[in-house]
Image (tube, rainbow, N blue to C red; front, top):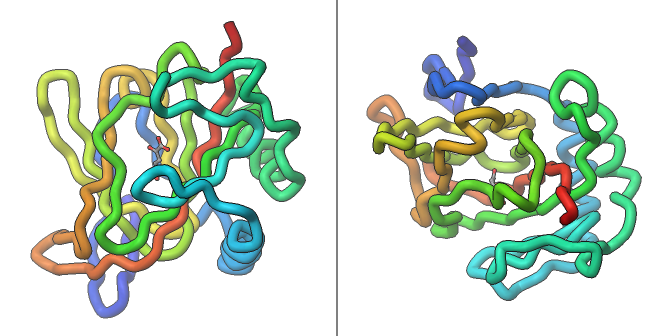
Length: 198
Ligand SMILES: O=C(O)CCC(=O)C(=O)O
């Protein structure tokens, strides 16, 4: 359980109890966060979705929900490889070789989904940068949880959280938590995955 200050609010920010979901607050420092954001903002963005994205390692084909040798972009850039190395061992058995950067401006979200099962390995890890943002989870029996992802934290999905639950971010400009309204700001996430090639 972590007690986190959000401006003038303070409450217990507890991750939902979902088998295979874990949350690692303060995984990186504020200066690592600033360095990553600065690097990301100097790279080209893909603009074919409602939100901007960057793909590293392999391009993911959202329409076909596939990944293949033909979509290989090359090794991860050093700055991302550093985090892939940090995640390997305890969190990923197989070193992540694909990263998608998502940018969410206030009003932008991501629809409810399970990450492509044949495309990616058993662990998905998302690093949050910038503003806090609520993520929603729906279980196989329509169980529902919402959880505020704080900047510099990692959300890890494996087991049921990876395969049986869906996650999403509502496209809205504020989140409600414990009776408080938190205005959305710009959130950037980096999702690390291990590609499975057929
Ligand atoms: O923004 C996030 O933390 C999650 C991103 C995600 O679900 C995805 O890229 O499929």
